Length: 155
Image (cartoon, rainbow, N blue to C red):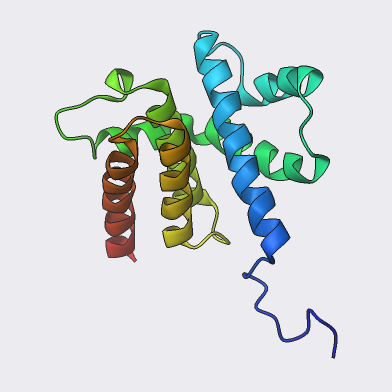
């Protein structure tokens, strides 16, 4: 029996989980850079610019590209769904970091079927803890959890 026989294909090994987590952190940085430059062009263009000046591990690039593509293709829908869950707030009033974390987490919740929803939310919380303000983790959890509960109620 090989090491992968009988293994749940949805379960990633430790190295793959670490690579995805670090890819999310890179996606956050790329989103921040894109938004800081006025949001011109696409996130994929910003990724290309970033790889010209930063050393990103090649094994992380496919997932970073996937997230950038999802955000480029579905950004308006993601923003609409997130905005509907912001009580007395609007997306443009959020910090760039919180906005980017929410968008990445929502992209995974909505379009990455191989990522369990609880993992997408937990990874977004980790990003908020590492890069956001004191209230960011709780805020990100609340917004993404509300989105998840609504999505789960539709099925």
